[in-house]
Image (tube, rainbow, N blue to C red; front, side, top):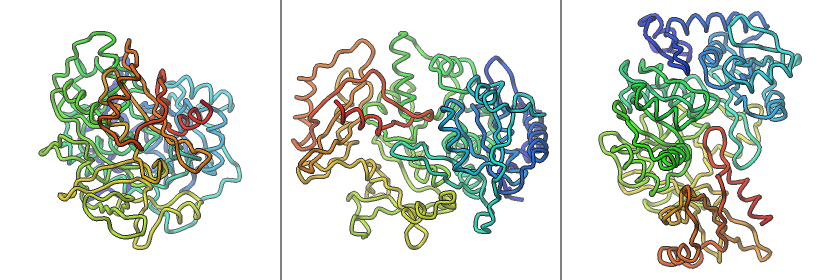
Length: 501
């Protein structure tokens, strides 16, 4: 019988292999499938005792740990909707999400996170029966959701807000289960696999690609609360890690650490390396593949689709930075500004449809209507193009497209050229409005350790590879790129910095 709710995945594994280890945490602690199932039962009783009802929202102020996973699945078991919040967010940011979610309860993973413990103490939270957790009532007036169209909702994932105010994406059980199957199948996940799991399970990358896929395939997680290059290298060398996943910035930080420490990494069990959630720079892809001696796989997805809709194929790795091909059940289109289907090779907005599509933005019909199109299509706001063979290339964000001298400039194209220049570790390109309605192109560059920027040589490099209207007017060196907890670049912060420079 196929699972209908995400907690069914664990119930099935716990029934079949209760003694198999599912979680390997820092310090040598392990949790079996059976032990995690017992934690879910305890957490579910805590939620019910606190008055949580079906469709109530439960905010989980957490960092990755066994208790966080137990709470997430316990919400599914009682019919509530989990709302994951990274514990390192500020009190004001968390309060805003509690209000937007109209949450009935807040839970804090206090043993695994000092930040969560501080939030719990600030809220005068009570100790839960589930060890390592505290909780407090959030909004006494919180009301259940009565819309029958939302009966399949599993969680609300708040967008990272890289370009504006976060919205509450209502993710369905069907979508999460579907992508868990897709991701596990693509990676051929099985009981022999261990996945390095630092990606926050407050985001779709962590919930879908990491947690749901591992539960579906019966794999184990080497679970971490945050990214540490040293810990990752130790786990690769000695922790039998077979799957490594993360955003491009993670790989850039890992390479920088290896270079700074002059290390010779070992990864005897690694067989699958993947990146997603942000544009992939060709130079970075090449460096990662040289490091690991195997392909860096890539995909395109977003919170609004419960995972990746396009993935590269393990049996046919690509030398370019394509996001690969549409996954089973998904559909994709490229649509021009005039609403027509784009021809292969032409750039337009990426539209998606399929079983992973969100149920809408929580209690925000206006925002939902802005992105939905006739026929059930979701307009992503991302720009892309199809190769003749159907492979997707993501060009950038529609809102980030720069108009210069009447021409469209796609930041990813400029970033790719700068990224090939010696000494450049990371780069990001933004547009800044000018008085005449034009946009000035500004490039931010993060350099390799010990490198200095030869701007004259870089500009000569740009002249060779870019048309005049695509070349940045300003190039600024930055110590470190601003990113979210999930490793996504915060371009709005760079745009704000460019405006005042």
